[in-house]
Image (cartoon, rainbow, N blue to C red; front, side, top):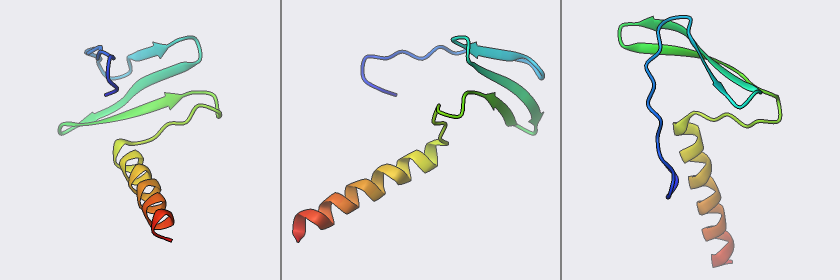
Length: 71
């Protein structure tokens, strides 16, 4: 989480939705054995990343800048 931001924690049931502004909708699509599936409706220009992919993206960028600095 970014510094200075807070987390809103919500409870939702299967089929319920959460809206962010007027252009993003998150729907609880499935709940099975502790695993939740989300459906996200958003404009194509809004980037959406899973946490593990975002962390990898930062690592690749950091490694590339380290290699460039050594040359």
